[in-house]
Image (cartoon, rainbow over all chains, first blue to last red):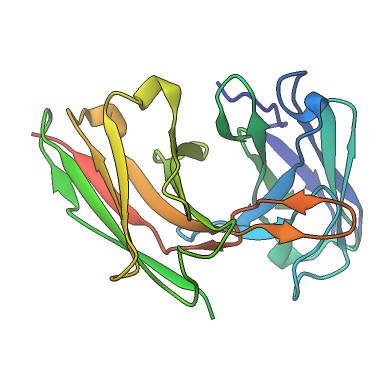
Length: 111
Length: 126
């Protein structure tokens, strides 16, 4: 059971917008720790998608955006494309664990 | 260009000790703020952080595994080594090492895992 809670799955049609939530608590996101997002295709390593809640690394399309409020964060993807189909993970830091924490992951299906 | 690569055994027996090496290039573990982390992923499951080592040799471990984990670095070889004792079948999974920079921006200072190794699949079975 992950410290950060994500929906197991989300889906959308090509061109649509989807959001993936990441809910934490007062010992992690709620205490001010930043959230990062990763994209993972089957059989490959995760790739950094969003860091520091809202920042995109070089090369990540601006179709991907992140936000954070209170004890939660969200990843939004607009203009869905077939090759966005992947698993998405949020990550932060936790005071109790004194280390990095990940969400349980969300599988995005493009219909 | 930053690259990392994990190496180690693909199969270990229960109760044995696992030793994984992360060989990296493109950065130095002597640079202020830099760290390397180990993260694992059981088959079909979520990512799980295991350990960090930092430029100043500070270390941190997942509390539930702290008694079984040791992380060390060899800056002359650009390597980080993770050992996990008393392996169990539930420890089966892909083990990743990742670069953790210190990104300083006007808005804040951030520590994501920005570069990952390809992963090393470790199976624990007799």
